[in-house]
Image 1 (cartoon, helix red, strand yellow):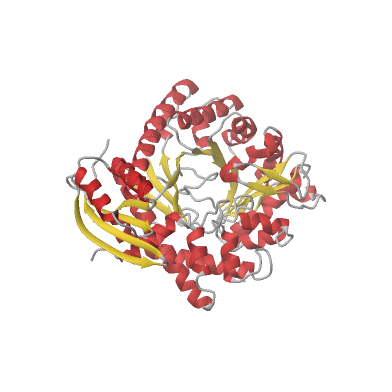
Image 2 (cartoon, rainbow over the protein chains, first blue to last red):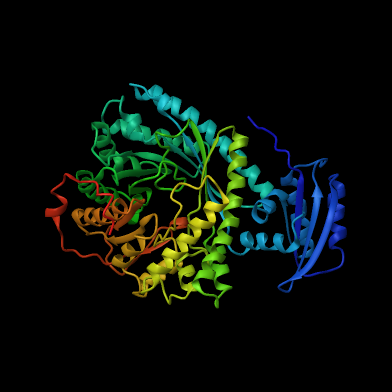
Length: 96
Length: 453
């Protein structure tokens, strides 16, 4: 019944107040799950610190739902909002 | 080029702050091949198929929700119109009720929110099975939880079946009396020109022109549109239309991606993206507030119809550019009870039933989720419905009516339904009847399609 989908790039977005240890915490979580970090960008948007991190999920040892749970824990510890979404949703919305 | 931080941030804000969601993924399921002369074997085949497909739908919807981070709020099934399924079965109310129960049990077992298609297309005339199904509606809908019903009572090609319209007024009264606050009436919508691929309830059904399975998606972003309109208080209406178009383009693209991928994962055909703006009672997720952000002091006041016409046109232009599969209702929902701005406008006296009807002449779905006093005569309900269907028939568009005659309530009361259905202020309706008109019956002929002034 289930066909496997093949897109593998995830975009992690962090929104909140800038502080020490955000990248370290995320990098640690990624390494634990064998996820390679491809790119990191950050800006101040409407007074929020916003960081995006592109990650390659090809070799990830766990599924998206588990990664999400781990990121939720990081978000709680650092009082941030963290999401992870497949890159294709952004391409669909912003690229014609 | 990889997406920028700005683009990612804009997208995240849509879901986190402006309630953008995939309102529904609705799988249309053909049940014609399950038909039988005996209810037992028929119900068993229906149940097996729907439980299997419903379970798959939920599984893949969860997967896609995690993958793209866009909430998929409702998972629904729609089936072949039940009156067709009833044709070979004994033409008894109990047979129709058994069909409804089979649908309901399958939906509950597979954890599907709603199942649509318990209805009939009777715009030109009623078969015996159609009549039985209509007679069974009060019992079927009051004995089931997740079944939604529809009737197509009119079309531009056939005109308006006034026999069916007159009959339905009495059905509605009966149904209202069987449920608390008449909530059972929220589970049935009647239409002119009902689309066969609408993913939204209560009108969803899997039309007879559809394939075995069809995956349809309803997106919704009133909050996103309201936000973008609020951010541009200075620009003129031409520019504002462009801005709305661009925003709807973006949310439709998200719906298109999710619909296509869902269909592929399930191994079924991708049907349509319905780009209707569907409000909820969450703060800010209101169509009325878009109209108000455009500059109309309150929805229902002069200017509202023009503003709504422009809004819907921009929505359609943006959506049609984003997906070749735009279909379903694809207009703007203005259900009174499900939109905080609409509720307030009725309570403040800015919006009455007559203006609501005028708004629907430029809005695809018609008079939706409004309550009237419980003692409103059946012939008045039928006359309200006939008026609304006439707008659809003459203008070659879909219009529908979902009205709740709230038992024991009078104009000015408020009826709380809870959940997505919200709260409805009871609207004033003339108690003067015109039974002579409605009870003439017959069919209002299809309108001439030329001489269009």
